[in-house]
Amino acid sequence: MSTFQLGRLPGRVPVGLRELDFYAAGPLPKAPATVAVPPVPDWQMLGNDRYGDCGVAGLQHLLMADAAATHTAEAFPTEQQVIDYYLAYSGGQDGGVVLSDFLAHVRQRGYYGHTVGGYAPVNIHQLPTLQWAVWAYDAAYCGIAVTEQMQQDFQARQPWTLESLDSPVLGGHCVPIVGYDSAYLYAVTWGKVQPIAYSAWHYLAEEAWAVITGELEHGDGRGLSLAALKADLDRIRG
Image (cartoon, rainbow, N blue to C red; front, side, top):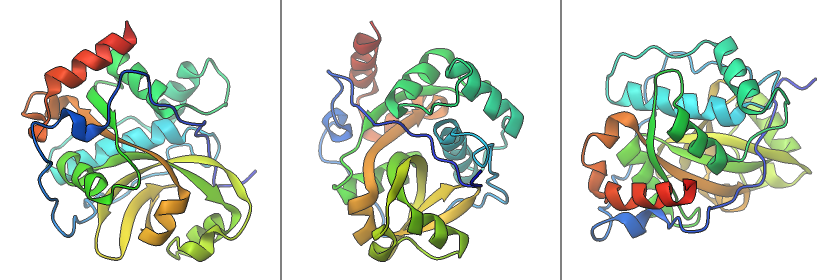
């Protein structure tokens, strides 16, 4: 078995849920030129070497990034707890997750004491909006396609570039983007930070989500109308 499992099923945006910038009171502020990767000592594999639980692992990595960026001391589930949550959600089958469905589940049920107050899709080709989401919410929850060469480059500690895409696609994967600079977006996957060249991002990216954690829900939403977003999400759930 490969030590690099995938597990993201084809994405979908629920009917009635608009893109992130729709919920802003005006134009989104310009994000800074760089956002440093949060100082997490060990991102951990979280079972993604044995199971296709990247959707759950990706959410925990996002929560870890949020806690580190805001200097908040939080306890996070163990690797076995991550696997247990995934298998409970998937009915015991290692079949992967649809990211938007999983976010809806966590918003309703919670995740080991952590909560998601809201979420909205981000256009993967609107880099300023994606960067704003990373800056405002400390990470963006993303779905990508992974090739054989990408796995090899990851193992060799090389960034993902256009050359990484010149091989067969193995499947879909969930990664949070936790930082960026002028050259790369920085994702967390398989327990490590992986640089992604912007030129490659436009081809390998398939979906992105801004996720508002429970902590941010009690703030101002960084300029979003949380009431409108939550009303749409409640309407979809209903």
